Amino acid sequence: MKMHVPLGKPQPWVLPMTIVCLVFGGVIAGLTSAITEDQGVDTSQMNREQLVTLYTQTSQEMKGLKKENDDLRDQLSTLQNSAIDGTKLQEALRRQINDLRVQSGATPVVGPGILITLDDTGNVKSAPSDPQTNLRVVHDSDLYILVNELRAVRAEAIEINGLRVTASTAIRCAGPAIQVNETVVTPPFRIAAIGKPDTLFGAVNLPGGNLEWLRSMGIRVQVDKRDRLLIAAAKLISKLEYARPVLEEESAKAENQQ
Amino acid sequence: MWLPLLAMVVGFFAVYLFRVHLPFVYTEYIGIAAVAGFDSIVGAIHSSIEGKFNDRVFVSGFFINAAVAAGLLYLGNSLKIPYVAVAIMVALFIRIFNNLGFIRRYVVARLFEKHLASEKSFPEP
Image 1 (tube, each protein chain N blue to C red):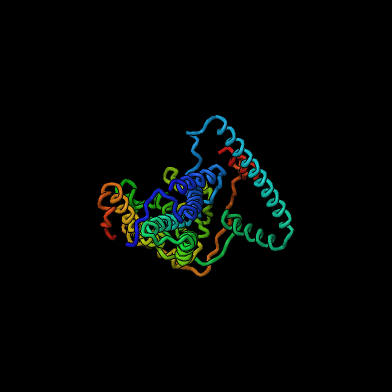
Image 2 (image 1 turned 135 degrees about the vertical axis):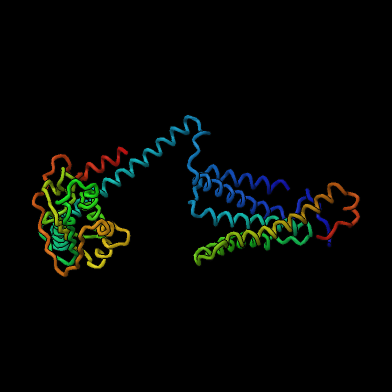
């Protein structure tokens, strides 16, 4: 320890310390402003004028952003329109339409898949009063559980006794019979599904699944993998009465409202 | 000794009133730089008490340490090394507390034990 410099007297460190502290204070101020900026503007401490200024600033910013948004939307639609002429887009559209036609059931389809046959046990008709009868017939629920199962493993087209199962298909119980697309179907039920045969086969034959249960109830169940299945087109594609596609302007409006 | 404090207040309000908006992403770097700058200031007070103060060492140390601290943090973040900021902070805080402890002992000795301080019995840190 050489010497003790008493505080309070002019020292050689005063000038550089002053400069450095000026910078340091500035850095701290910058830091606080950066932190408060992140937490959003604290409006609770502002007076009327500050709030008005903030409001005008923000609404001007918003106007600018809205205009930018509109410009971009215009650009997008012009690009889309001009791209329609392009063969690439035509090709993409054609492919999309084909996919939609298959999915909606508008066209017959062919491909590999599985064929499931369900038949009631032979003794049902002979003993209709048997309380066990109810368990020994195929119900509408059995069919739609099966359809659901097939859809879950990406079956691309399904039909029941020649009736295409589409997005608007209803499978329901109508008294003693089962209706598919409001057409009565009777046993034996022949369910064809196009998809990856192994996957479909595995899904419907899952241990503890519905088919196993039906088998245990004495219903004749047969599942075959097929390399080539033909599935018919839907007989009737329902006409739309209420639903229509949302136009671009409408979607923008809806977004604004939300 | 009040001049630097005054300068700090002036610097604070100069930047504050100019509404310099730093992007939030840089907050981490500026914070590290500020801590490094604080370390330099405390170190300078320490060295001036010891009578070893050198203005060039101090001013260069202030700016370069701040820049290096922020730069190291940037490097660590770029290389995805976890907790670089914590590591730098620990290193800086050890230095800051050491220096502050020295200053505190000096001030306490000066204020409350004047008779001792005048008798060259000021303890080594």
